[in-house]
Image 1 (spheres, protein in one colour):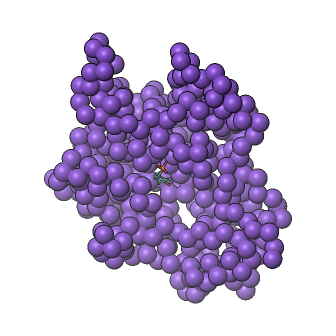
Image 2 (cartoon, rainbow, N blue to C red):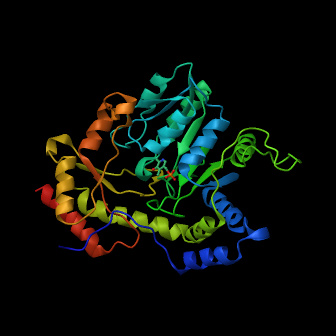
Image 3 (cartoon, rainbow, N blue to C red):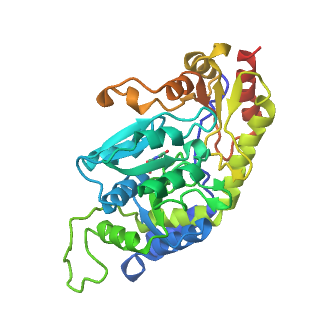
Length: 367
Ligand SMILES: *Cc1c(COP(=O)(O)O)cnc(C)c1O
């Protein structure tokens, strides 16, 4: 059996080890927030935003951010059908309803026309997810957001390094969120970040994130509202600081991996990969091949071929509306993509030999 190729794993160097060691030894008492503050500062700088709050996860960041926008029972939030459940769960926890719309077949992200059609008087937010690092059509979505006065949220968990006409993913909407789960481009094990340029919203979320205690509250242990506990630890933030010191290197390596695949696979007819329209940069979190149905190369065929070569097969996201508890069948484009696509292994330290093994599997299926 050939050695297993993982689909993802973090890039951890002596730098991450030394920062987290330091945090474990010294990061207590009056230094207990040092790495957290530094992590937020470096993230703000990288993204070009005014405010950042580090969290225990992207899911938590979304939950607090949507709570701060006042999303509550009876409200609707529009999002793409193709997605990880993490974007939908906080909507449900707030008592609101996720409204799933289909995606575009080229970007694999929200179809702005369908978003506009789905707007009702109950719509309180639109969530743009930059899937696998691919960018949403932010121009159209921001226009719709302004026209209807509905906040646009950017779930950029998969899109650090993605840039839309000079603006970083996550920096364009009411607020943006990021994930540092172990599978993401930069990691803290578990962790997240909420970013915004809106001072008022920032203050609200900061209060929520501190168990409802406002910065201006002088009384100790006095919550002004019911808040949340989605904080990151100083030790995790220390790992995050090291990852941010290396963020350009980490993103560039992801892009290198995507481009290596692209150069060898994209010319195969009936196969598409992550797009990078002019004026944009794809952060390349998850290189993905999507076959056209007429090729007959299904998810099951792809998975079997990968497993036979001891390569991790990671399926394209299922349409959320096909999940029994959302009680429907998936939208058309979302379903087709899920049925004929697969994510390719792309961790930073993947070798040329390993990449070539993956490429061979795909090529063999297309002869
Ligand atoms: C990974 C991911 C999340 C969840 O991130 P956590 O940090 O695990 O909460 C949310 N949205 C998208 C699009 C993701 O890919």
